[in-house]
Length: 410
Image (cartoon, rainbow, N blue to C red; front, side, top):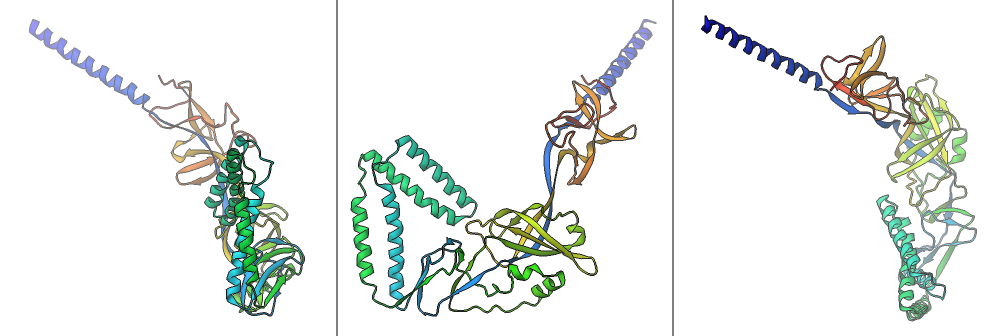
């Protein structure tokens, strides 16, 4: 009897232990949930296409043959009558003139570095640091021309630092004298014939000539229909490059791009509105204004024309190039698609607040790569909080067992 009772007790204890273990495992499984905080995201609706550049440009012609030595750089803003180029019949004279131009640049730096106006050393050091950072940023952006210009300013500040430390405002006088002597000697040796070319008007000077200056002009673009535009770009006109053209000048800073895209991609663009355009060739991003749009007879394609007055240094004005246009920008909160749930006919997610499960509604804007971009509670303030709508930094429950609104998770 005692033996039987003992066996019963052992069985009861075993069952109790098993039930307790199952109960604890059940509680543990309820607590095993996966969460993730929402974060703010911006998604661009981008059109990738190929554009053509239109601009009013005039060739600058001179008839002399020989070696050319440019006084103005590509993209410089010039004034009427400014010297642009010197053409030497003797090619060795062009090399001499190049050296003279280098000396003039060095003299300009040294002459700005001398005088009795020195600022305090701390300010000079700050200027040096700023210019060095500007140069690094320009190089990183691929704007080497800007970096080159800033290099001269950096040299001026470094020279001023040297003069301040040595307490000698005329410490570069010997270098200036030597350079001026070299310049005088070089100029005395220029005996060959030379022809000066000056700017026929004020504007923007470019050394590259492609022969399309009178074809892809802003004037031609004014009355250009989509049909005419397609005929223009498909005809592949042969450029007629004048060997006597030293460059060209654009009197106006305004220039245009035109491209064709499917009508569905063109939908939503608004005339007169600014759009961001990326130019990979120049690693440049510009705001450009939509001037006009026109469709084809079949209604399948549209021509869009954008304009800008911005002329970044070193910008590549190649007639035909790839671009991407940001059509629209959508902001919202990013959540995983697996978190989406439905409660009482509403779409939303479970959110963990103070260890309690709550339901917050969402408005899906778009889906990409396993995530939903959902609307903000307040589109004008992305940090705004809401008790009923999903908000920034909410702890979203991605997965878990036996979840329901109001459940408390210890």
